[in-house]
Length: 283
Ligand SMILES: [Zn+2]
Image (cartoon, rainbow, N blue to C red):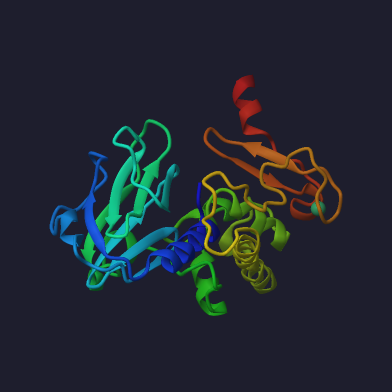
């Protein structure tokens, strides 16, 4: 699932490759992908792609005064191709064809169609409900007071940091890395942190910037992040391996659709948290 660092490198490379390209046609083979109908997608024909950027985890493809706001959900990917998609490509959700033969494609893996897009007036993007409800960007880190206010809530840090309405850009992979970097338990509550812990947590957001730097170094200029490129993660999904800092075995808590990893020595005062998957089986 792409999170802020993956979406950032994606939009940087799309912007570098496609800015200035003229749209020949645009259509949406994904039946339910477009959440707006006016203006229609083919309004993009003849326009120039002016920029690609992101807001939180949402890519925004700008065509002058129109913008395509995209939500990749868990399985969507936005890439450009030198050649056009085969009509048999059942993963295609949106195809923006350029006069030079290239194609920007929103594709989605799996059978579910969850990714969506809206074609909006560029000046309406910020006010769109999907954008207006977002908290401050997780990277670059918000100002200290803004960050402290965003996490001052009586909820566990793991879901709190992943909740886009509180802080935008973090998902199930990078939350584990941020909490490990901050040496904080995923089960601490945001409002229970002391000022020093809030500072540590805010400082830990640098792992997002480090990940972007990693992608800049490992994905050659002019290329795109491969769809299944491994994320440079040190604790997420690394249960059973030694903590890269202290050597303690990394533990996991499994939920129905995700897992949480942490170093018990440094994050939970030596306590190994109950595996909810196991306790469910024992009920
Ligand atoms: Zn450790």
